[in-house]
Image (cartoon, rainbow, N blue to C red):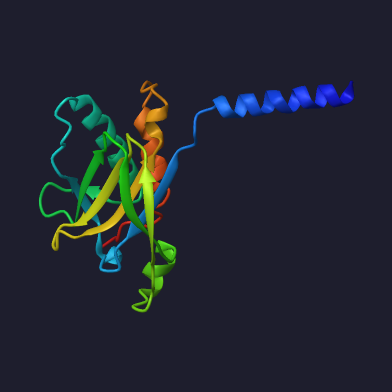
Amino acid sequence: MKACVGFLFMLAVVAVTSCSPSRLFVEHDYSYEGHFKNYESFNFLECEFVDSTLLCSDIQDAIRHQMEARGYRVSNRSPNLLISYNIFRSDLRFRGYQQPVIKDWVVREDDDATYKRIDYNLDEGTLMISLIDAESYQVIWKGYASKMMRNQNFKNNYFKGIVRSIFDQYPLMATVK
């Protein structure tokens, strides 16, 4: 009888875990060309979501909140960083990199730092946020979250939590001058 109860319990656990949604996959990579110690301001590039200005404002508000929490200020004139973001509407093969922890690299700025290429298969609905050096127009940091569209409940600031998860990968603070 105990064996039967144990088997049924294990079967119930497997059934419950197989029905739960997949966890959000969050990752980032950055460019060794970034001048992370020099950035203090930002602004957004034009929103490309033709079908939903509400989606643009939700994502921009969440990004703005995360940037300001790190000491960056919005600037309409000569920002140091431009921010671009996109939600990919289909599955995506993406090349990322395994690198030293960004905070450690910024302290040392080790020219000999290496990275290892990693190819990801990201799901439909991946949100990708790019920080672009406004002077060189080079992407210096990219954060992305996949599997976010598995939860179709967009109520109550849905993107705020996802954007925060992405920016948890960006622990740098703005330069104060």
